[in-house]
Image 1 (cartoon, helix red, strand yellow):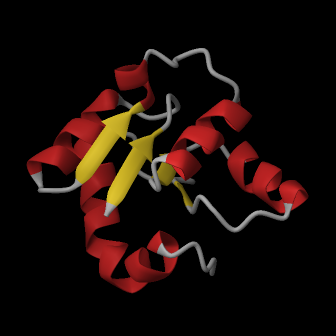
Image 2 (cartoon, helix red, strand yellow):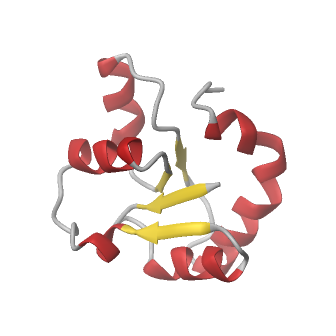
Length: 106
């Protein structure tokens, strides 16, 4: 499973996911800190990555574009500390991971 971590979350999220064996990159790894949401979605789609963010705009953009990919995981009212965000994500991946990875939506 491959992840792209948006600028709304710490690069530590990507680092900790990597430590747990996941293929994870932060948007800063691409030097795209100032990229538009559309550019970030396009990158995630191109690289077949699940986008992880705290920015709810991504879901809205996908809905307006009537797109199913890339999948997006939004952290809303989640812990602020990266290690807790990663723990929450990893704990729930067995429930949503396959569906999110195939872009089937929920």
